[in-house]
Amino acid sequence: MWISKKQLSSAVIIASTLAPVASFAADDTVEVKVGGFIRADYGDGDRYSEEQGEDRLGVTKAALAAQSTYKNVTGVLVFGTEILTDGDEDADGNVDVKDAFIVLNNVGDSAVSFSVGAQPLLFGLKPEGYPGDHSIQASIEYGAGGLFATSNQAGPAIISWVDFGEFTLRGGVFDLNSTYDDVTFADFDDDGSSVSDNLFLQLRGTNIAGTGLYGVIGAESIFVDPENDGESITTVGLGWTNDVFDISAEFQQIDEAIIEAGGIALDDDETYLIVEASVKANDKLSFYADYSEADEVEFETFRFGVDYLYNKFTVLSAEWSQDEFDDGDDIDSIDFRIALKY
Image (cartoon, rainbow, N blue to C red; front, side, top):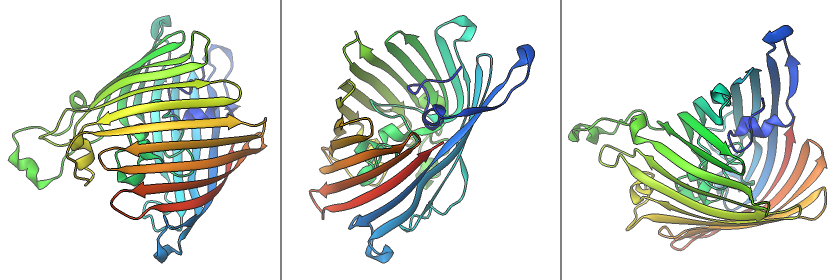
């Protein structure tokens, strides 16, 4: 049984092109699928430092995924790497395990499924895809401006979901911060992060009543430090799609302690507003635009892009984006990508 996009992440995006490579006869059939993608990028603009020549070249994401299924149990393993010239120490070409988890589908022939292991949380209206794959440049909910990436969370987790036709109820426990190394930890009579400190629940609707409407409402509690061990994130989003258009808006509220843990001081809780639109001109050509805002930090992102389906497995993209800071200089760039999914 293949796993739906709304349940998993990078391995799922690869899913549509994976091909069986091995199986065994009789009732012990094990289906194995492999696949992956490579995204080669070039960007130019003042979002890239002068020290790096004000441009960026390389592979922003490359992944190889393997999925094996026996009856209703599926294992997913995803390796990935990044190789870039922008000075990012993490983009050095080292290969890492990005996802590794086990899925039990429709346990006991019920509507309930589970996944256990290192995996994305898929929190928010549009969290699917490999981390950072919301376009070429990240928007606020994917970590632009150094803000907390609510839609990009991944780590060891136990997640369960129940499908009710056009609605899915999904939730779980996780531990993204299993140790707390700050020297001030000794000042608190409290434990570090545990799964009881990190949990989420959300309800997602798809093509509601056959209208093309989709939406999400969800809440999350996470451990920040011993003084802030149950800080909240909430989200509500609504969108509409058909064969040509996709329009959506999402509102997220993030406790100020979560943002401040990233080194940004706030006077109140942060709120994100994310508005997105796309139009499919024909079978090969589509355009998109989006706007996102972090109210307390006073930071905005704008992105305008075009995707061209060169062939069934290859997409050419171009995007202009700008980040605007109320208390600093704006930065922008134009970026180009060729993406191969296999």
